[in-house]
Length: 374
Image (cartoon, rainbow, N blue to C red; front, side, top):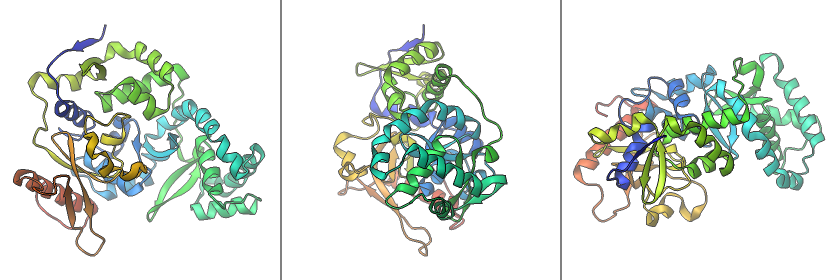
């Protein structure tokens, strides 16, 4: 039976446990591939934000390190779940797609009918795409879309991106090396030479366990939303792996986490005075269906204005989101500006100093300047 912890908990403590699990407090991860593998999957719809998300979890890393990992195929970016791009370890992508792609593609059937995409159209796009990138070649999105057009497949009105998405979800294509701020498209089997194979039940159980180790404390519903796995299958997977987890009861709900993260409760959970400048769409906030532990409900609209799905950059202090931040355009030495929720008192002196160190860390990550601190 899994250990059940009934200790005095608060939202701050729960949030700081998540910071530790995600490598945002403590030593973090030792390399870019280790961070992505350890996080299981990281939201990467916004490429630039995802680079900083990795950078925050790898001590002394630079944007060039993350870009190099993408260029070498040590980290890959594709559409494995929720119809959005994520970073994954290359050996994990195929078995995750085996679990998720059928449901994802079925869920897009209505939109594909609107766009006039049939099975025959997908076959034609497949032939054109693989001909274009065969033999280790790579193509920009524009070049791939031209290949679609030449095969008789219109790319207008989002038709091109949907064709590309389906071919990636089917494990035929994957985004490969970077060309500036865009990724080139390559053949999956040329780019990813080592892939694990897991059965559906085994795969969901491993995925759930890794999610709870990297995101816990979290609930089964958090994972079901995050992964797109039905709750019934999530519960079956939890029954298979619960002996490897610790259960926390908080406000009448069961949360699950790794024994290593739970052990922090014995000596006091670190990070009470930590301040972080996290990117937009970071897993610390986006990785859960219920975000109220880190983000007070009355401030939610300040992070996702109007519920439009576009997440702002966040300032996190002691596990709680206390504001947003912005970075100035190029040419101004990467000025980083805090925008706290408390627009009367702003950040307290200690928090402001910590934020300045974070700003310096962000500038160093981008290579904008060599500054001490952080």
